[in-house]
Amino acid sequence: MTRLAQTAGLNDVQREILSTVRDFVDKEIIPVATQLEHRDEYPTEIVEGLKELGLFGLMIPEEYGGLGESLLTYALCVEEIARGWMSVSGIINTHFIVAYMLKQHGTQEQKDTFLPRMALGEVRGAFSMSEPSLGSDVSAITSKGVWDGGGTSRSSGAESGGEYVLNGQKMWLTNGGTSTLVAVLCRSDEGHPEGTAPHKSMTTFLVEKEAGFGEVRPGLTIPGKIDKMGYKGVDTTELIMDDLRIPANRVLGGTTGRGFYQMMDGVEVGRVNVAARGCGVAQRAFELGVSYAQQRHTFGKPIAQHQAIQFKLAEMATKVEAAHAMMVNAARKKDSGERNDLEAGMAKYLASEYCKEVVEDAFRIHGGYGFSKEYEIERLYRETPMLLIGEGTAEIQKMIIGRRLLEEYRFQG
Image (spheres, helix red, strand yellow):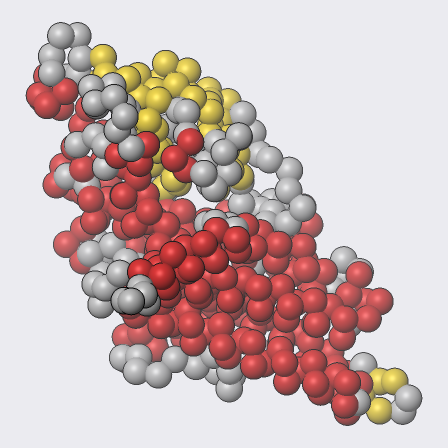
């Protein structure tokens, strides 16, 4: 283990899990990541290795076949995996957001149906909020689920075979092609009083589908992969619903109108994950920078002996350490059962911004070679921007942080 980004207070099981994951990253991910990334190739063998390690069930309770570990353990594993290749951590993240939402909000039947197979990686999760025209404005979604119970009431729909008909277009769906279970947020305001707040008229639907592209079930189309600047390998897609019929027992939690709160709870986990990814990528960039600085010579000595480079290394290491500490704090807050939107927003904001800066400094240390696809830092330089927008932009995080601070420090005059 390196000196930076250590986590105090871990138990023996956590340390053993992290050691195993780090070893897997060093041996199975780092040697092939850049080659796979340049080909935009899905890391099938790596994913199979993660299944064998049990990582798809890391946070799923033991009674459903998982390891029952904490968000902290999961975040530290994500940090290690992102250090190897950020795309792989994205494959796991969306899966775990859906598993977490099922664990926290699902009916018993939904938990029994999905969680054991998700723990094994047999069912792979994805979730979908964004749409082509709304970005971070979740309250403006237009995708809609309309009750079609054939005369039966929605309250008895699950028993009577009633169903919802979903229509709309979703965007930026990570694991859109490889997933087999998608949590989709739709408006379901039929039956609600006029003037109901938008966030109170949304429902999360659990959509089962085949893996692949094209029409993956009647009424549901995954058009294909979106070609991206970075974050390659993992499939990012659209999702088009055209009279997609979903049974009433696939409403998350069994009750409509709770989707916004369920999704926001999941996104808090996702923001800790993005913070962890930023920490992992920054650690790798520092490793590459400090190693190259000791090998590259100018003016008769390694560039690491030049004060200008030492200043960069000092700044990079301090940012790695600070981001890691904030990420760990946010995860522990969530694990304690406390509200952590402030801490998760701060961690996500700081870690993503610092990651960008650390990667750029490592890129500068590499000089002209940093621009070559032969060097790993080129890949990191293209991957980093995704962290600035994933799970809410930096501006959204600052809005969340600011509002929460005003709640906590309300003027009492």
